[in-house]
Length: 65
Image 1 (cartoon, rainbow, N blue to C red):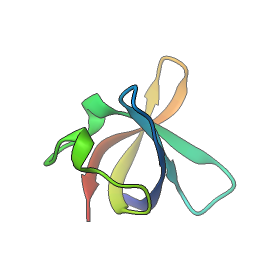
Image 2: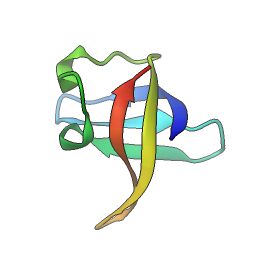
Image 3: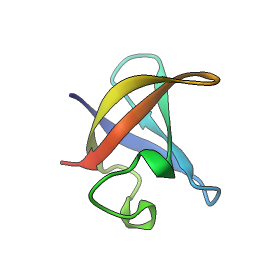
Image 4: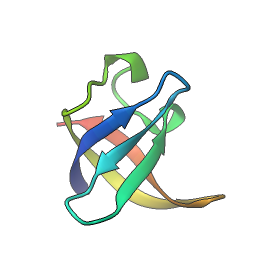
């Protein structure tokens, strides 16, 4: 699993993870596990698996560390 930091959350149920590279990783609330989407905070460290969505790469199995 990769580790990143939540960079931005939206009120539409998705967010972006700072992966430590020049590219942020998109994630949807349906890919959050162990907690509710509304419990996540910007700046929080998370584990995730890189997957492929209909519009390109996305984070899956997103869990707080």
